[in-house]
Length: 202
Image 1 (cartoon, rainbow, N blue to C red):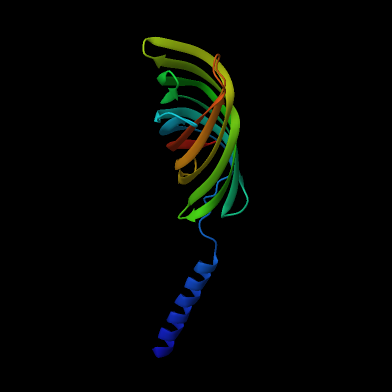
Image 2 (tube, one colour):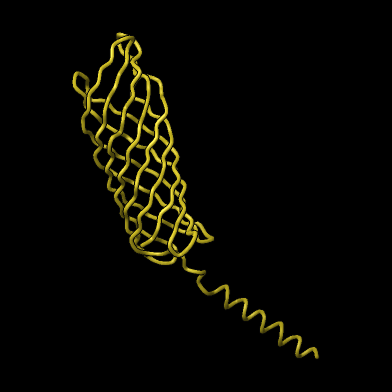
């Protein structure tokens, strides 16, 4: 009887050791994806003024490259539109600025690593172009213009595979926009924010 008990314990120990030696369930899915995300944050002009609210609503098109169970690379294109508001200090007074981000088009690259439990963290960088419409109000005077500029970002997010075809993601980013409107010097707008989204693997 004791011999049977010893055999059973050893068998159980061997099974558990083998299970620990095996790779975890691999949910690092490669391939193309399409999704959308909403970014909420603050906008402010570099050098002067007071921050205001800002948002971006956009679509992500990309491709995930699996390196192994634990690491991945993502390449993608972001197409977004949004709005930013802030106060600019000038010699004539405070100008209330409304900036419509008509189109933001950015190429992005990211490196992802396993966070455990099928979740991945991803560092991202991006650069591209942006089209914007400007409206500045000072007293009863209103100035308007539209132009194109450049955009860049750095960010980090965590995404969680909800199924073999869908991910949910949450993260933070810091974006910079540079514009030159008529009658103004070139100015830089910063946009730190938090974002959430979902995407479908194709």
